Length: 181
Image 1 (spheres, rainbow, N blue to C red):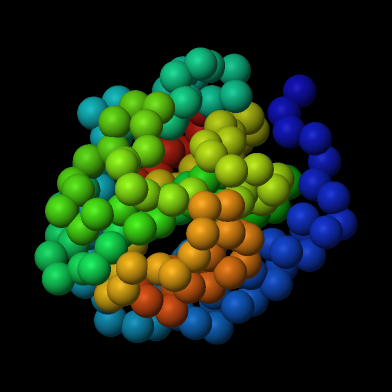
Image 2 (spheres, one colour):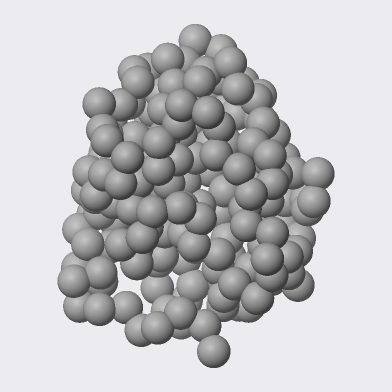
């Protein structure tokens, strides 16, 4: 089953965003970063790095986003979270963008958005957690410490949100789920 095929517009946004972010050195939707960033420790009480994402947090489950915990955002003015995958068969897809999380926040509850935080659009043009469906994906939960609070509204475009996150990242950490249970 899975998500419907991505439109040409969505594929274009992903390609443009990937090129922009790769050039900025932030590593969103990609590998490493040429900039020297501080490291954030990211974990979840529901799965460990490199293990499958529990079924409950997929499109076939009903729990919404998994709970996450992080540390290492000292000195940040805000925190952002990007959930994406880079499926070799279907390409890159952003499942969730949350920004302007209070820098004193160190965890995200299951199926929750921290008070005062805002959400940007996903690859599918929706706002909020778009649970992954492809069992052969590699799902990345990346937390970014930012040196500013982003001047973006709820529902900001994916390209603009990711570009602003990339431009203001001072630390980054990632938790990766290898597949879906």
